[in-house]
Amino acid sequence: MTLVPALAAASVRPDVALVTIHPEDVPYRPVHAATPPVPTVAATAFLAVLRETAQELTDPTPY
Image 1 (cartoon, rainbow, N blue to C red):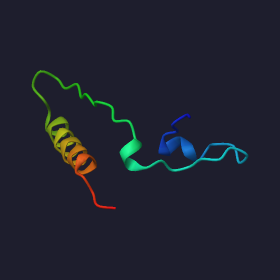
Image 2: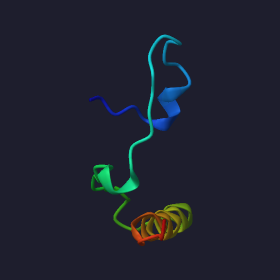
Image 3: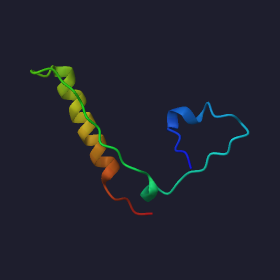
C-alpha cells in the first residue's frame, strides 16, 4: 500500500486506482514550525491557524 497526498492525487495516471482509507487508519505525523527568535506577527498568526487546524483534525468525529 502506498499513501498518496491529496495534492498529488490529481496527477495519478488514469490506470491507477486510488481508494479512500478509513480516517482511523490514516497515519499521523508530527508537524514542526520554525520561527525566528522573536516571532513576527505573520508567524504568530500562522501558528494559531496551525494549532486550530491540528485540533480540528485530531478531534474525534462521529461516523
